[in-house]
Length: 299
Ligand code: ASP
Image 1 (tube, rainbow, N blue to C red):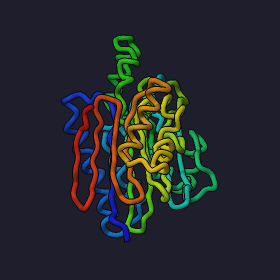
Image 2 (image 1 turned 135 degrees about the vertical axis):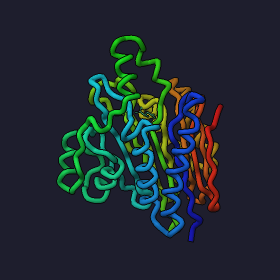
Image 3 (image 1 turned 180 degrees about the vertical axis):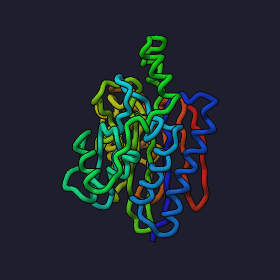
Image 4 (image 1 turned 120 degrees about the horizontal axis):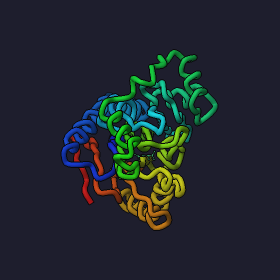
């Protein structure tokens, strides 16, 4: 029997002081929801899905309700969940009418022979299996509408917010030694309609393999995809590096090769927890030996 552990992140960027508390509290609520499942013998997949659902429902984060709006003023959501036991994964991209994309990703994993469903097709699948399709407006909150208007009226440049990344992620190891990893995001502010980042891409946004560990990433998606950041961390673990070394080496490699910054959470097959980021701050929470730890890590 394994000692279960879980870690979540609430994005890696220069989180302003006034948002620090909401980020820490949001991560704590999420990790405790996942821990409740793990401590009762539940699966890593269930724990990851539940933790991410809590953060999707929390408007603090760029996932689910409260996500950044695209150029056309819509929220388009991406999510991925991966099972380290089977290397199977499920993902959705560019969905506008799904409240919890991580749960739809889980259904893609369990009910289809595919890995990634996009836009309308993903929503049709959701409807078919009984998900409620929400009004796209239900994902939009005042704060993001204001941000969008400021960018549109050219009072702010979208790149002023490119340091703002609050994608959420979770990695868990359960009592049976199974590892799962997942991520969910609204992407980046004022993105082109149809833009898909690293989050739903297996090996980029997240990866899990029971033989080595599980990883969830956040940061500049266009860089993360180019180096398959999460799989790169796994490759370092497979070469014998520790969780912290593997996360650090992968992020350094990404910066060296692409100039992109980001953050990583990782659990190895023995239940060691690591995190690292090359952004200014990263929000995280984890439970190890039954004890909750949380914070905003500052470089
Ligand atoms: N990686 C996400 C994306 O580029 C953004 C983030 O991590 O916050 O869509």
